[in-house]
Amino acid sequence: MIRSLASRVLDPDRALMRAMDGVIEAASVRHALDRGGARFTAGAPLKLLLAGYQGSRNTGSDVRVEEMIRQIRAVLGDENVELAMVTIEPEKTAGYFRTVRQMRLPSVFPPFLFTETTKHHGVVACEGSMFKSKFANALSTMMAGALGLAAVEGKLGVGYGAEAGAMDPALEAFVRRHCKSSLVLCRNDQSRRVLEGMGIRTTSGADTAWTFQPAPLARGRELLRAAGWDGVQPLLVVCPINPFWWPAKPDVVKAAARTLLGEFKSEHYLSIYFHEWSEDAARKYDAYISGLAQGVHAFAKERGMFVAAVGTEELDRRACEALATDLEQRGTRAPVLVSDDLDMYELVSVLRNANLMLSSRFHAMVTSMPVGVPSMGVTMDERITNLLEDRGHSELLLRVEDHNLGARVLDGLRVLDREAERIREESLRFVPKQLVRMGQMGIDFVDEVARVYPEMPRRDVPRDPYRYLPALSPELNRLLETYA
Image (cartoon, rainbow, N blue to C red; front, side, top):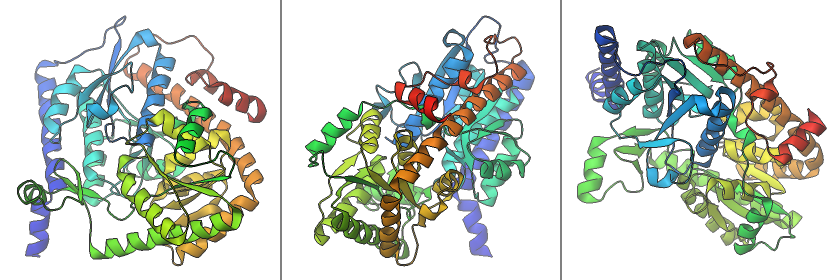
């Protein structure tokens, strides 16, 4: 009992939530006393603060936000909105989000949010994995806290294309307290059920990455050729991760040991945050990498495929290199291409050159589906599960801890190859459905803005979901002509 009490008292995640609780209460008092801060007036731009996970070279997160920005500007009118966003490392988002003012998010963020949210007319939470404990409670605390700060000042608070999953009791209670006035546009119905069970308003939506326009396919081919592909051999792209070192948690003791003694370097995430790691996690990770390599090697030899290991977040480099090493020992060479070297436009172009894809990254699958890349998933949480179930391809779903993973990967890739044309066709038919949901999300966002700020001008256009999307690429327009 004493140990349990001590863990609760010393738990840095709980301490961060308590600090955020205090900041939100202080903001409520500030607003009650002087009603200061930014107040929207007709004719002035609506100032929105985007709160997300930028600055980690996470291609999925960056693509999402790029398209979110384009959609918000499209549905509200470019002249009617002024956007700012937080980024962990501005150097890694330089050149991205060109119409948006970027601000560095400090590791201890409650005071920063207390100061910044009051300068804006609303908050838009951006990260796809918005309300879950799988990755980092601190990230969910930041986004839910920002929404809570908007709520106490009676401002706009929207979660955009969000997903919700299992939360620790403390995080769930925090979200319940501070997001009950927010509107969460969910990217699947499973997330709506989670949040509505907590008393939070939701509508149906989609991930925003569906409309992303990468570099031309030729750029991806150029990068793959430079890595050793001949441009003719069928290409299998594999996107591995480390599924077993989450969640990341703040740990001041490890931070001190890293600074003073050089310890815990391999577990370090950023600032005072460290990945979870243990001998058991290491064994599971080795089994996952070995299983992928076993199945991929056998399939590549069987079908004469060229294999590329692609990391859509810079953290994935270790997993990609581990997979490439294991494959090479088996006799299959696999070059490594990672987002720390390639920008989001180049990386998605690489993905779209694949003939087949095996992925533990949700957005690798999403961003390659508009050109019909047949994909299967090896998942650690709800995201790929929800995607493949919604797509009608649950038979293409594996889990990172599956027994005999290598044999299951081989069997799955055989199905993917044998049924490639059917899967490609069904994937292409799925994309317009997501565009409709994304367009409806734009309508719901405009409605929420009008509810909070009725004086905000609205575009005089029909409530057609396709009218509430950002400008689409020629490829997507052709896709709609064929399948919509």
